[in-house]
Image (cartoon, protein in one colour):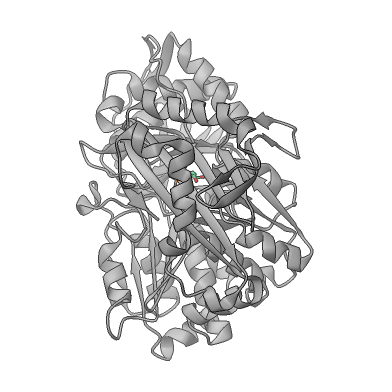
Length: 543
Ligand code: G16
């Protein structure tokens, strides 16, 4: 074995987005592309020497190839130990759990999350720090700086390892262990929730369907739901991780988890349905004939946390990303605890969690989590709901309707306009920003604007300032529009419009969501001139 120093030149497009570096597989397959970025990570953290990392991914195409390269580079850079998920598999929450449990220096997670996979699909690299969470902005900025000036990287010429067999080996001076990717995570879940109550629920004939979307959570769901909780194997759909997700778009929402949705909305459908995304950090929750919006899910979990053993002692606080509906704020107010509003991106919750300011956090983008790890956690959310169903004996729909009755309902929807010309999207946002000072007290689509701004966040723990995190327009009666450009797409620009309307009157809670939001949807188009500028008459995706 020998360590080689390879000369290289920078790629200018290696700026990490909302969640790591995401690009088309073909971009990552260019010579030196992956290597440059990995070396930039090591350079940005003061080198890999003597450090310990967990490495794994969501099993998508190029996962194993990339892992082989990273093992050789981490060893050449002097890492002391590497823990690799067997078959290259490691869900994002499991990676966070392993970093924390084994006190590692960090982790490299290979995933483009909910984006499609396969040779023509997407690939991604995320770096997590020693608290188990995504690298904060200060670190991702340093990685980008390093990537922009890279001239060389180090790599061992060691042969590829067999990732299919658990066990230990040594590459250069580095201990490399192929580990069971599931057990630490499953043990953690068992320590949080009332597994006896959930087991007894299944033994009484409770029926659920869990869609792993041919992505990473299949093996986790098998171990936890089937083996440890006694659910029948038939409750699992698409439970084998496949390189191209079987052609799925592994994004758990009403559009892409269609088969699951059909089952839940059929006559005599199951009591409970759930799905997770490519890397297992997102969740979608369904009851029979009932969809729970992610924003409501966070609020419901917070309001019912006392049913879960781990959270019985109470919540320190709650946080939600800015575009997420303010349903959780009502719960926090009722509980007399703080509710923090952060920019989009799980990395912004890290400091609040580390400082013990919050216990639960969540986002409208199907992400929910707690202080048990430092990532959002799909199966954790599913188990939380199962725990609630077992403890209350209520249905999903009843739990949510009772919640609306108590706190009022936040009608909520996100409209996505995908693959827009980036210049048009940028101009739309720039012009909207320029218009902000003129909007106050104007009436648009019959709604009066109370306040409008460009969201800026000052991290309450380290004072770091993140500007331009989304444009907010507040109307009377707690209605709100938010506009921002996605930081996770790989084709053109995606405009996200977040639409929210609060309705305290429960006689109006049955209105169809898009109907309840109609005046706001019109206002969004008038204010941002979406149709005129983009030529799009409908969003590509409504969640
Ligand atoms: C990532 C981030 C989330 C974010 C989501 C959408 O999720 O971790 O915090 O809400 O992207 O971001 P954007 O609106 O910028 O596209 P994931 O599941 O893709 O890693």
